Image 1 (spheres, rainbow, N blue to C red):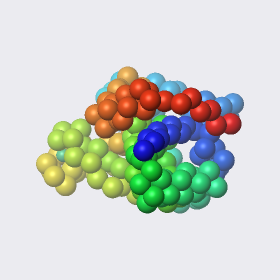
Image 2 (cartoon, protein in one colour; image 1 turned 90 degrees about the vertical axis):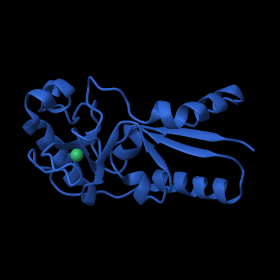
Image 3 (cartoon, protein in one colour; image 1 turned 135 degrees about the horizontal axis):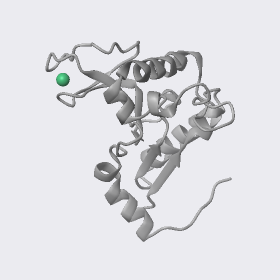
Image 4 (cartoon, rainbow, N blue to C red; image 1 turned 45 degrees about the vertical axis):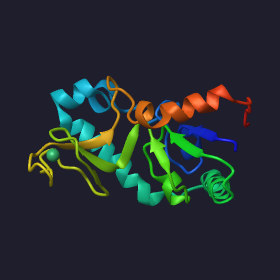
Amino acid sequence: MTNIMILTGAGISAESGLSTFRDTEGLWENHAVEAVCSAEGSATNPYPVHAFYDARRGQLPLVSPNPAHVALAELEAAWIDEQRGQFTLVTQNVDDLHERGGSRDVLHIHGELASALCISCGARFPWKRDLLVAQDCPVCDDGALRPDVVLFGEATCGFSEQCRTMWDGVMAEREAVTLT
Ligand SMILES: [Zn+2]
């Protein structure tokens, strides 16, 4: 048994046409990071934060998974179906291109555009459209939904709970492999 953990970042989505945050024509070029991507900005004035992520979410139907997304999905399928070991795909990306490329189990450590989070009760919901600042939560009936993404000033989600054991296992018996 050989366990695999793969980490992907903005580069894989850039190939599908999604802007990365940090490149020269990146998403922040016309935005103040503090206003649109920070926990403090969200608490002070959530409107720019919602608008920024609404625009990002609105791009998703316009882009498609590229061969790298599909290749990772095929690797996962083969690895699991042939019972060769565990396969964990961790992504820093908030888009849904891994899922649409066929990946079965994706851990989004920076959250997901296609999800809304209630800041009152913590419930999460699949979300495809614009997210109103005063959108009521279907669970607790509070108007407190926000984009389910990790903002600056917040901890990455999921990693410690879901991946720590896996990560430790990988690191304990790792064979260093660098993909280029
Ligand atoms: Zn709620």
